[in-house]
Length: 219
Image (tube, rainbow, N blue to C red):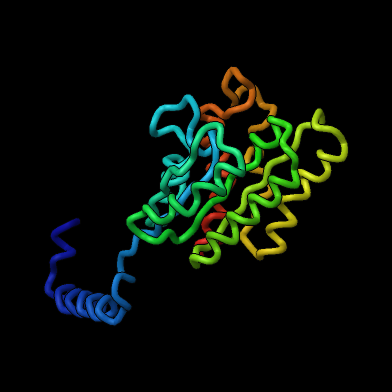
């Protein structure tokens, strides 16, 4: 079969196609032919990969899913276990200042620890709003991921906390993924023995679920 492809009738058209491809690449803006996009996963232990192997966390698994979809991306893990929205607000500027390249997208995943520790949801709102404003001022697109409160926080705080994320997404016009743990929360087979953090299979479900929204946000 391979010998047939080397016949004389194929040679000239092949050279012409190669010439057209080379011309097309030369006409592209610098770096457009092969530009790796950088995504920052900025959050808490859900992003950091709590108690998981290095290749099992959210950032590496999301990168794998996106690469399999044909996207040339690198996902940077900027998660810190135990992080609150206040902690994220304090370090977001430093994190971005110390990156080698300007990110093409920042995935913001914070607030769960605020809720679990019984912090005032109004502070969570203020902190997340400040983070979004800081990132937006640097010209970096944001994908905001939501979290849902547990019923034991009280009815008023339950309703207020759950309204934070759609409110901020609408206010700032950011891309929005309503619930980071969609398909994983309350599923023991996808959680560690603390029943809070996803195991490797749970993270895979999260990465696959959020990937279409990430692709849309990058475009």
